[in-house]
Length: 251
Ligand code: 6GU
Image 1 (cartoon, rainbow, N blue to C red):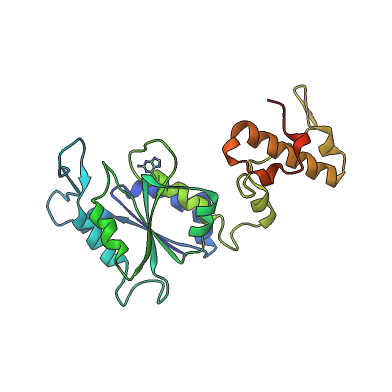
Image 2 (image 1 turned 90 degrees about the vertical axis):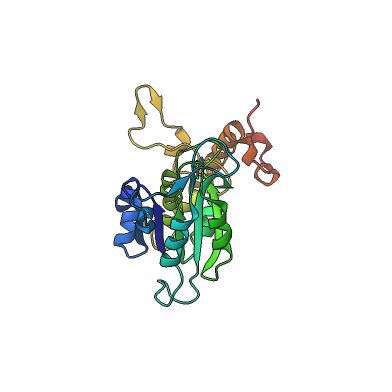
C-alpha cells in the first residue's frame, strides 16, 4: 500500500517514521510520502488560504495548490502503483464519516491512500468535487475521528493511518490478537491481567488461574458484554445478548 500525505505542516507527520507505520515501511508493507502543500504555490508568500465567499469567520484553503498537488501525485503515465490502483483520497474532517473498525478494514483493502490534510475552516469544496470526477481517483472519503473539533487533519491522518496499517496482511505477528481486541467483534474488550497474581491487595480473578479454557472464554465474553452494556450500550445488538441474559448486569 502506498500512503501520501498533503499538508502545510509536514513536521506534524514526522511520527509516521516511528512506531507502527515505520515498522510497516521497514517490512515493505507500506510506502510513505509526506508532501508540503506549499510546494504547489507560486506566489512569494506561498499562500494557501483566503477569506470565505459569503463571509464569515476564518479562512478557507484555496483550490489551486490542492488541484496541482493532486495532478502531480495522481494520474499521468508515471503514476505510482500502475493500472488498476486508482487512489482513495481521504479527507479528515469533523463533517466526515465516523472512523470505525469497519471503515479501517475497508481502507486497508485499498492500494493507495492520499490524505488531504486541511487547516483553517476547511478546503474549498470544489477540490473534493473535482477529485471525485477524476478517473485516477477511485473515491473521495471524508473521515471524522469523532464529535469534537481539531485544528487540522494531521492528527486525524495519523490516527487513521495507525488503524489501517496494523490491519495489513503480514503486519501483525499474531492474527488472533487482532480478532480478540475491542471492536473487532463489535464489543469492548474484556479486562486483562498478568503477573503477579496478587498486587497491592488486588487479586487476579481466580477463573483466569483455573486452567479451564472454556470457563475462561465464557468469563471473558461475559465481561465484554457487561462492559459494553455499561459503557457503550449503543454498540449492543440483540445478537450479542441472545442466550446471555444471565450475564447482563442489573442496572
Ligand atoms: Cl478528521 N478533522 C478535524 N479538523 N477535526 C476533527 C476531525 C477531523 N475529527 C474530529 N474532529
